[in-house]
Length: 93
Image 1 (cartoon, helix red, strand yellow):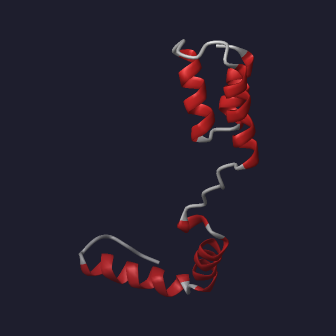
Image 2: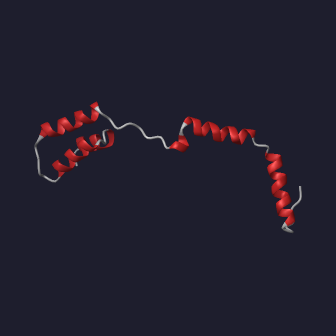
Image 3: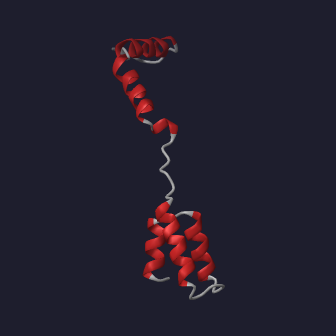
């Protein structure tokens, strides 16, 4: 692998670049610098947008934080202790 391959592979991972790199590495178009340059330029001109999982959007994180802060944890704890106590386990406050 050449340094150029590693740089391109880690920086621009669009399908056109990867296809061109795979084509070159298999020796099918060895020395076709123009095709590689076109693929790299295509990746620069039209990069893949970033993906943010739905559970990691600002709104989703904000909602989880709101629920955490606004929950009355003492009531949750009392309810859990009552449940454990009714199951005859040794639990005290």
